[in-house]
Image (cartoon, rainbow, N blue to C red; front, top):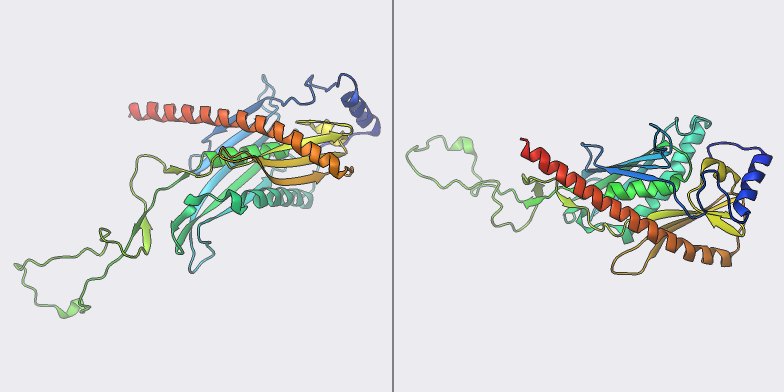
Length: 338
């Protein structure tokens, strides 16, 4: 969404520059270049997974750029008597900071947050992306994965940043390890108050009411005391990234600035996942803007978007693996200093 308004002459100048030969952009990038992307995981210690992503932050300045923060919190839900779903569920929520859109009223800001929430929730909660390790006890208990994303600032290309931050937070998520247990009552069913005469010297076998050695039917669960935070959320390679194609007929460009977004008549959002064992998947698509486009052009743009999405996906995954190494080394150093 364009966060500024431009005059007709300013829009015409930007459009003419983008369509010139060679194309000219205000920051010197080519049409297919991204700005600098900064990523950090594990920024919220009380969350099960979190990440902060920034696109276009100036090197020698403290602020700026499009900044998005994502955090995951897991909650136990009752499948039998509550709102839980067997196998678990994913619920996404997006909030836009008023500082990111100072020109919008509170109602318009709520509408924008709702629109982003709908896009993210419908994409990530699709059954094809459902992680299998959100189930605790079949048909009894499950995890509800709450993904909360906050847009702190918008300097263009917010939808790409939204999906990258969500993917990073889900990548960082650890699901607590659970162990099924069964409560067993003592046999006999007598009232303890009736057995008033008890020989203290008589050895009687006491059967634990928390015996899990011969479980025939699990009714509850417990969290074992492990040194780590749990197991990785399954399906790391399935979480999609979004590529926004800013269409300026007859061409398109990537990673638009606010001025360029305000001058672009049409934008095509492509959310794609790239499983290692299968071909790429188009998880969601959306057209934004008053412009028009033919179906044949959309097919060509989807093919082009798949190429750019794979490059973005590979670069993001490499950065996430670097973050895993950094955090593991930091945890080991902290453990040694104890």
